[in-house]
Image 1: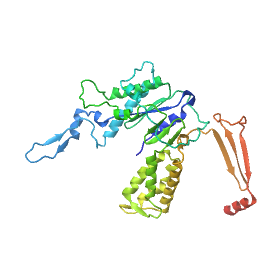
Image 2 (image 1 turned 180 degrees about the vertical axis):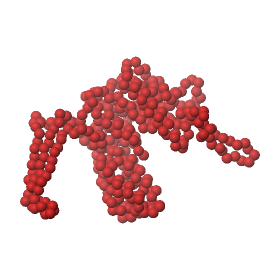
Image 3 (image 1 turned 90 degrees about the vertical axis):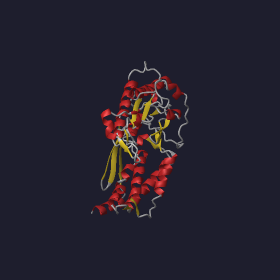
Length: 371
């Protein structure tokens, strides 16, 4: 399971928010029966018709879909175009004037839901004082397929209007329920997820399979996913030399889905991917290089179950301190130059120049290896 760049963008918005303007809060709005809300053009309906098998003597039966069918390869891109449009409309609403935004009919229902924060690791590293900020109140909506995810700061009334703006954006593209509808037609917003607390603002929420904490600026795997990672790694012991190609595809897919919040994991797939070029049609070889990469994942697993990942570790930022260094056969040295964004622990903010001479033994070894 891959999430494109949606999670990357959300984490960056959280990290760049100004803490002086209040905590960043998260909200999810899930769409119900998404594909079945997108109607087909009349001229396209016969192209997706299905002929039903019938018993001799019965008239032939043909099914004509009126909406996007499940299983058609072009259904997902068409549906994503709709949800991207909803996101654009929602961002236009919440970045405009919220003063005249009326509360949506489902806002009261969402406001009454109380949710517990998802279970996560208790100990959190302190936030980095050198983090840059955008110095504006956050209000942004992003989307992954049918999950609309909002990041916002503000007082309770502002947050209610932002949520109502998102709900109105959904209703403007996907028709809501009215009095003329059948009792079986439901709202485009998933009421089941709403009643579970997805549409409730919170500083800690399960986002695209990850527990995101905007107060401590951390992201962590839920307990069941951490256990699943251990289960995958335990299923391939170091002594195993071959495995089925089908299983290896599954292992690679699950590991890739977990690398988003595992710093350093994205560079571990070279040997594992190369394994697909070895072996037979149905089996692949597991080399020492593959097992070394799996050992690295085992180390990362032990690390993530003891501490959450700092969002700062995942979002590339401009350096606050620039370091130049070099070495010769006699010594190593360098200079540390703080930028304007560096937060100093004391009044001394002058550049630091350092030099470390090598011992005669080290110098002798360097000369020996360079010959």
